[in-house]
Amino acid sequence: MPIVRALNKDDFDAWLPLWRGYLEFYETELEDEITRHTFERLIDPSIDMFGALALNDEGEAIGMVNWITHPGTWSRGKYVYLEDLFVSVSGRGAGAGRALIEHVQAWAEAAGATKVYWLTADSNKTAQQLYDRVATKTGFIHYQIDK
Image 1 (cartoon, rainbow, N blue to C red):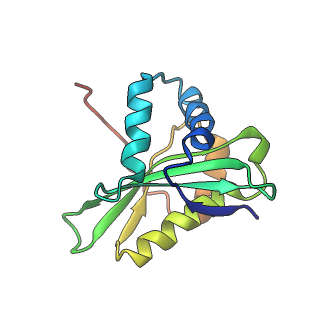
Image 2: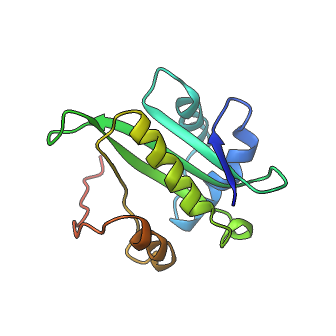
C-alpha cells in the first residue's frame, strides 16, 4: 500500500509530472505560471488549499491529490472539495487512489469538516469503479459558467 504524505516546498519536481498527467487526462493546458501558482498555494499554510503525494515502496511519487475547504450553507462545519486526484500509469492498481481519498477523508475528519465531495468526468469509468466503492454517488449534474 502506498504511503501518503502532505506536500512540502521541496515536492514541486515530484508533483509536476503528476499534475501534468492529470491535465493531459482532462485534455487541458495551463500556463506554467498558473501551475507554479497552484503549487505555491497548495503549500501556503495561510490558504485553504492542500495537497498530498502517494509514494511507492521506493519513495517515488505515484499519485497526487489536491483539495480545498469552504463553508457550507447546510452545515456549521466546513466542506472539503477534493479538486484534483491523479495516479500515474505505473502506480495504478496498487491502491494509491484509495489511499489518497482516505488521506483527504482523515484530514477532513480531523479538521471538523462535515463532508468530502468531488466531481469526475462521466467518461472516467475506471475511476468511478473506485469512487462507487468509497463514496455515495449523489446524482447531481455539474454546470458551470466560464468567465
